[in-house]
Amino acid sequence: MILLQQQFSLKQFNTFGIETFAEYFTELHSANDINEIATLPYKKYILGGGSNILLCTNINGIVIHNAIKGITITKEDTKYVWLNVMAGEIWHDLVLYTIDKGWGGLENLALIPGTVGAAPIQNIGAYGAEVKNVIDSVCCWHWEEKKWITLSNSDCHFGYRDSIFKNSLKDKTLVCSVVFKLKKQPDFNITYNILGNELKNRAIKELSVKAIADAVIHIRTQKLPNPKEIGNAGSFFKNPTIALSQYIALQKQFSDIPHYPIDTDHVKIPAGWLIEQCGFKGYITGHTGVHKNQALVLVNYGNATGYEIIELAEKICSTIKNKFGILLEMEVQVWK
Ligand code: EPU
Image (cartoon, rainbow, N blue to C red):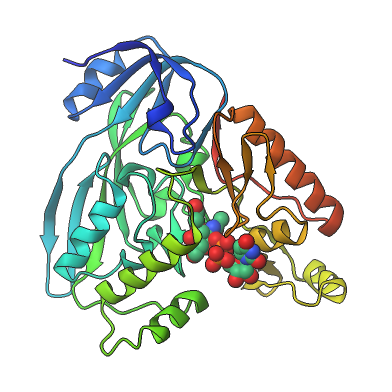
């Protein structure tokens, strides 16, 4: 039997720490609870760790906090282990669990805030790795079809911070569990410069998943604000992809513009660099601002509203459009 709460404050349930209210709120502790919730005639909003959302208004409908826990090995062979993980598990706890076992695949993704259920939705990524590389399948409840569906990795249409769950299945499903396929003999991905340099500085004798995760945790702790201290949702914008021809033209004017090749015709530009070049790094306005160590992160210094943060984001976007001709896209999902 689920507990339905009314006029529920969401302040503790979003890492931006913004106060808005849900008309109804409930917490899921077992997959069976879904059958009961499915019969309720309210619009449904699914909340994991609340680390990638921006709340702008009160929510008319039911906010469902997925807290279903459990990690089980479903299959293994000499090379791989398949782990079925329930959506309410804390992402970083899962990473630590796999590192303790010595399994490879999640080490570069250490300390990302949020829950396991949110990981496939935006295909979380960091330091040269993306979760799509280790997802075998995703099991969800389909609200309209009123049935369980299992999507294979290719069914999920993963892209950069993107998946089917942000497109044709947007608001249509509740991710209940994810199967990860992890390597028993890990191969290491340390091509991302910042990570490679950190490992060099540490003079690691023997590379391991633990050594990589420790380095990632150190880098993230230095650069990214802890949401428990300053409200934020990690990267606010995606790193934009532009045509190679546009990059070459920009390089004539801004010779040190960083870029990562995507394919023969496109490159990705770090949005943090663009924002910093426009003088916004460390900028504060009212209760909001741009973090002083990582310009891609917008922060709530006090009692900011979602609209104040949107206003700052719009100001940043228009300044960058004017200076570089590049349109930034938000990574954070806005609830309004
Ligand atoms: N940069 C600046 N100024 C800044 C920040 C970055 O100039 O204030 C430039 C520098 O050239 C730097 C480059 O951007 O070398 C890359 O910076 P960083 O390694 O910090 O990564 P990012 O591109 O800013 C992305 C992800 C992060 C992820 C890191 C590490 C996106 C939108 N963000 O940021 O993900 O942790 O790479 O892999 O792709 C998140 O999604 O919430 C997140 C934090």
